Amino acid sequence: MARPPRPTRAASADASRAASASRAASPARAASTARAASSPAGRRRLRRALALPALAAAATLALTACVPQQPAGTNPPDKTDVTTAPIGDRTIVEGGDLVMALSAEPDALDPTTSSSLYTRYVMETVCQKLYDIDAEGDLVPLLATELPTLSDGGLTVDIPVRTDAVFADGTPLDAQAVVTTLRRHLDKPDSSRASELGPVTGVEALDDDTVRLTYERPFAPLTAALADRAGMIMSPTALEAEGDDFGDAPVCVGPFKFVDRVPQTSISVERDPLYYDAEDVHLDSITYRIITDASIRAANVRAGDVQVADSMSTMDVDSLMADDGLTVLQVGSFGYQGITVNIGNQDGVGTDPVQIDTPLASDVRVRQALAMSIDRDALVQSVFGGWNDTACSPIPPTSPFATDASDACPGYDPEGAKRLLAEAGVTTPYEIEIQASNNADTLRLAQALQAQVADGGFRLSITPVEYSTLLDVQSRGDFDALQLGWSGRVDPNGNMMNFLRTGGGNNYSGYSNPRVDELLADAAASIDVDERAALYGEAVTQVQEDEPLIYLYRTRSLTALTNEVAGVSTYADGVVRLSNAAFVEGE
Figure 1 (tube, rainbow, N blue to C red):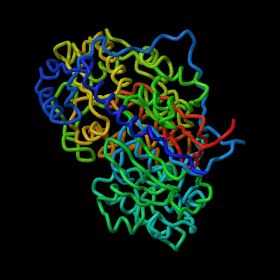
Figure 2: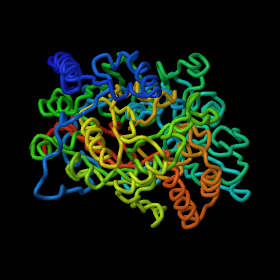
Figure 3: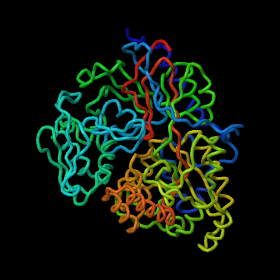
Figure 4: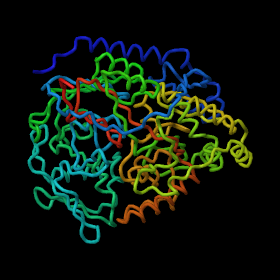
């Protein structure tokens, strides 16, 4: 029988939002604007930031010992991957509404334009892809029936499409529907997917169940790209009806279908009876509730007011693991967290770069000095208690494409940083405004960065911004420096090409280096893993010279769930998967 709804959930959500608002307005997060306003660039950014509603309660922070650091543990954390809470022998209780606490508001639910990890959580249940990854990071077919077939030296790629599926609006899935989605990804002016699909010269349906892509040059990362948003297939009927507004009510193939969205509050989906594998879907519905404060997410999952909560704070994870009523999934990441420096993004992401005339943007020595002022090992220990891992490049050391070059890390050398700043002729302390997500863990990181870089001759002021607003800020180029990350992809192309290639759809820095462009293109065109790895390593070396993006650390995805649910998974791509979840009884 279906699990009855909890009457306390609405009250719990109201309390969560009230507590989050109270924390945002607390004296510890009050504004201190003097440092940001001391330069023309700072004044310009600050005026724009203060105009944003998300910053009404917290503008530029000069954080000084106001955010607690991770307590030092006596033993290193046990970082054994736990990717799934299996159903096993437990009895499935069919039906019910599962509530997941989301740590941030997703952006538009549009596969073509989205850039948010949290959108991927929701889309995992409503918008299936041609391919996916499994717990080991291997690529597996989903809406495709087999891996692609290559011919003509890799210039022709055929993808077989399943024919037993229909979209949530009843439109049949076929090869032409896939072509419609792929052409939208390639042609839509604000698409973030075009460069992910590579140098495509043609897309066509050979018959009802075969899609053919043709290429200017071979493109090895295609299957990996189609295992993420580029492979999410949208209903052509809905696309024709909704156009640019598709993300307001997405229609795809999936075990669930979109119901409604209350901005800053929740997103609801319900079981789709038209789904091709509907008998294996156990929940009636899923409610994604936005709870941005990690401590409140932890309290909600402990109380059972939500059954799943993502991105648990390393401050809470030990106590959550000790709770007999909970399970904590943990897995390393393909991605990274870092500092993006705005070098040439004056007119918005994807436009031609226009050099910004500040020492930070125009003099590589200033950016190198900033990188040399950061002690990544100390950050990971003091801020995250050793739960996260240091990162110096977009390629994780566990990747088959990792090399000594991609694993190399710029040395921590604050005295050398000061010498570089002197060579650059800038006045010290050199002031930088960094915008960062307005949550406790990120603010702890920002405070630790602020203290570290001071020893290298920098004065860092911190502007906290609500996450979805921060995504818009980085797209517009309305920042000097910005702390965000990328959840990562199984192929390095997905972590590099869009971010580092001139004009890339996620090149928020406005970075342009023809040599890096060439290396990334050559790596994507090769099918030899060792050759690709060497090319990516060379690109990393150049990027570390230029420092448009200073890599800091890799998160461990920490997901908490009550033991009344099972079938929940999270893999190294950062996505929490609920499609196979169920309420269960027994141990």
